[in-house]
Image 1 (tube, rainbow, N blue to C red):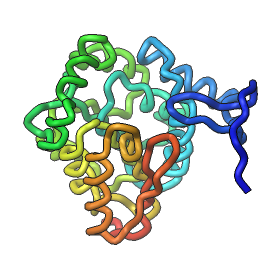
Image 2 (image 1 turned 120 degrees about the horizontal axis):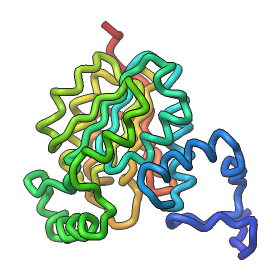
Image 3 (image 1 turned 90 degrees about the vertical axis):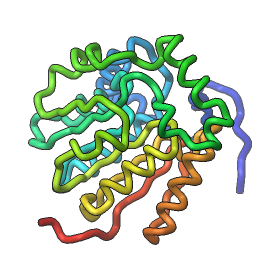
Image 4 (image 1 turned 120 degrees about the vertical axis):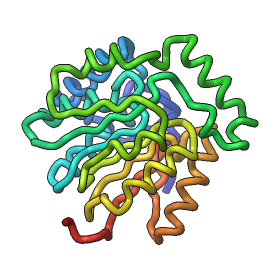
Length: 245
């Protein structure tokens, strides 16, 4: 049985997602503290509550596995800040690798389809508006309260060899551009431990079809499935992998 979504105070209507279904996670004190740490990182509230909820769930699940965390596409550190607040990061003894150009999208790694869809114009607009950070200094300052992090500045795939983790439990990919996103997951694939969480921010998001197409091709080659989420994200759980060395 389906039910239309009536207007009212119990409706969730943010970030392209409208639902009357339960979203009381937003009232959890630990969620609120984590979310506000993300807001502090960027200086404004993007109303990404449900996306962050998914990210925190995936990170908390991955925190119980062996292996480090990786985020490709950090920008100002909204989700990574929220995750580290939520997990009391340094207590875990894991390393968080944080990779970004910190200069917007690198045109050298943009597909023809994405160029035609004006992805570089969107990137420039994001820089001009202040949505994209320019330079890593402010991000380093924001994340300085945590010790077990490594910020890697530069374009992917060039910087991928600097991720020296032998095992990876959590990978968040959010580069708004398909070729580096696929390159990152391909690079990390054999190091993802069984049960590792791979969260794809752009996978089902409106206007980012090339990101979904690229990840679907990769997943098909590996014989795995990606869950398409109404938040616009995609979720992949590494169910098989090589034995840890």
